Length: 307
Ligand SMILES: [Fe+2]
Image (tube, rainbow, N blue to C red):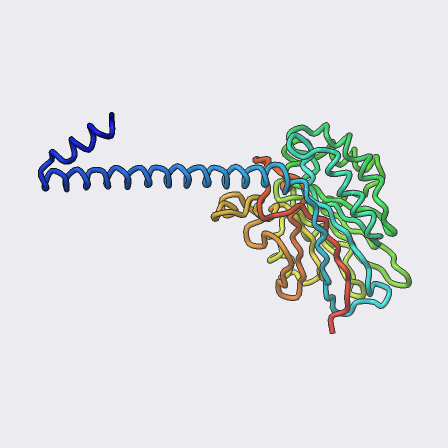
């Protein structure tokens, strides 16, 4: 019945009206196809954003990558050839980074059989009391020549004195503009540590135990002090953290997220004059509970003679 009526209506149209009808029908179909494509595009984009968001919030902050670096040191004593320094940085315990993840990082560090373990600051984030939970776990780190630490800017913001006291109570040697000679075989390594730039950074005080016959390893939370350290000329190797590698490396966002003191040398290994610098991406997150393109890092540095 409907088809009969429709055919009669179409046949009763003049030729120009019929063409007009066809054009209108084609336009309608094109519009419909466009709307479907637009909806599909929006749905795929939303799915991509959601997957990316889930990955950066749920997966990447819990991944761990061991970064193994060979640091070539001039006039390296034979006793230090192959000496293994393992570094952990930027714990930021609570609210975003949990103890279970940090315990996994600590176990990974111990499993690397380090000669020396270094902790590069930012132990706490929102409350200083978190150090009371973190310090006993750090005390369990296995290291042949001890565990040394420096403070980060976040430790200063929440209570540097309490962080230092609690770490020391658990046997961790905190270096605040100090240095010590660590004996290794018939030689040794000077381990120096500066305070954070947020505290009372003093490189001259930190390097007082330096001596020409043994290499110096400097721990400094902010990597960008490397220019001043390289100019001084007494340090062979600097280990730092602070930048989190930008934390979210996507669409240039990292440029906005990199903190002062961590913008020039944000992650990885650099040669700055005669100084080797390694900047760790750290473990935790701050500001945003996200990591993207910047996996949490356990650093392993193996000392090798520079030929
Ligand atoms: Fe940090």
